[in-house]
Length: 369
Image (cartoon, helix red, strand yellow):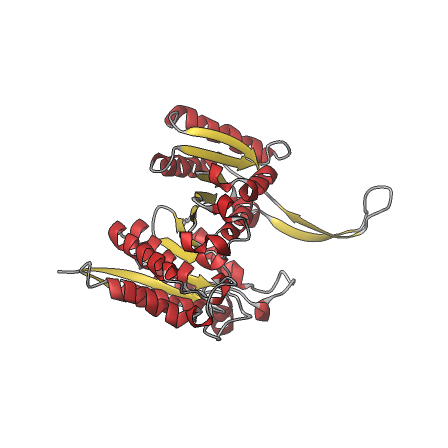
């Protein structure tokens, strides 16, 4: 009797529905080979949820997610919902909220180079060849979840006055939050090359000084066999484009990880190639690292490969289907090796007849499965 996995689909906004459809196509192709069934339930998040329900994460969506074995998300956001009015809902609040509600405190972003795309990177191929980084980002603490407010300063400060609006965002971490993300990084390193680079700003921030102290304590007490390197975030940003091969596992707090993982994505040639997994102690969520790309939404030209690779991470981390996940990576590698490209990963040498759209790229992956 086949196993059934319940998957909550959150296509979201922009290109989200288009690329999620291709991931579903790939999963449905794989299901018979591994004698499993996937039961998909679609729900709203982000801007489309604001339009339909007046809030970016309706309770109905959260109920579906909690009743599922995993969540597969597309993307949220777009200019339609952009606002600087803090009293109005924003699509991104839905993403932050579902991470918090599901307790998804770890974000895993693998940064790997498909050899066929080494020329698509903005860096020289000799710099990016062989890059294989696992970015472990803390996901439920820091500035994004700290206390925030605005107020009008009647008094002003300093020699020049300074009356006017003030805005405050609070960067806060608790010891246990740093402990658990450090363990995730060290555990990841045990299955890789045994090196963790802990990223902080300990020369300036108290939160970073505590971060460094806790990471070192966890290392010394539980993982002394792992090599641990401390690196300031500004230096890390420089080293990622100077010598990315030096990194094995990068572990960092929420905002630093957000920025650095997008920078690392460009090493691969496109954000359209970077998958991610958000993991806690219950239902996990899987999504591409790119945004909703509203400028190309509905045109059928978006790159679905990051979404498909995210579905592969779901198979591996949520369902333990490591071989099936490897099938997806192999199929994508073969498609790229044959020269097929979406517009974002083409190079000047790519023939026009090898440039395909969203659905065609999904079909090619399915064919290679």
